[in-house]
Length: 296
Image 1 (cartoon, rainbow, N blue to C red):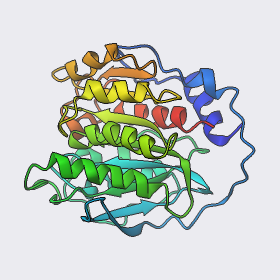
Image 2: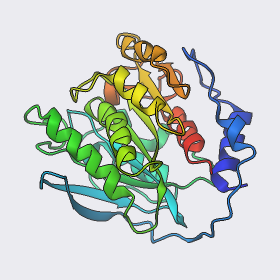
Image 3: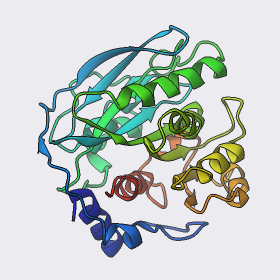
């Protein structure tokens, strides 16, 4: 059994101690992961230090990213897509936390909001380490200024380029790319996941969205349905506050058997879901999502 499959089983067995109501079917990580096997050889990963990455969208727009290599090679890659009030620096603490190699954030945080305070983040299981790729959408700057103009068409191209480039990173397993996004990035995650799979079937294995709102001009329900039509079906998880949960519940009828809705009590929009009082825990849900989609 692979490390990721083992982690998925352990997470299901232990449960989410802080979990509140979940408005769709319970997490199904244990069912498929318990029998998952892998024969692929792995090596020690690259050094844990973050790498500055420049890459290009399909329209020629140059983009900036930072890559945090996993502990093994090849390894799955989580692409993190920011909200409209910030840039890649939104993830300065989340990225090394998911990388799980003991790396302290070497960058200066723009603020002291909860997502820049890892002291309350739940512990990632010892045997889980994921490569993390964070990017800045075109026209966006650090919190609180964020994105200067609305550019849904350009941001969609950026999200697609991020997932495509993630598969080419040194140490990446190109068949295990997943996206996690907040607000505009929430839609970018699910929209780009489908687009990338149209180009390279099976490359994107899941999309987790924090407060989607059809911000990139593709209805969120349609995006979830598109992933449901992939073979195999691609999991799409939707997290939102009670005020915005309708975007999630509307997608429950989209025909994606791997879709799940999580209503986050005490959460707010986008990054406002990444707070210690969130119930169920947004950060724990991220861990469980990655354990599910990255299980071999």
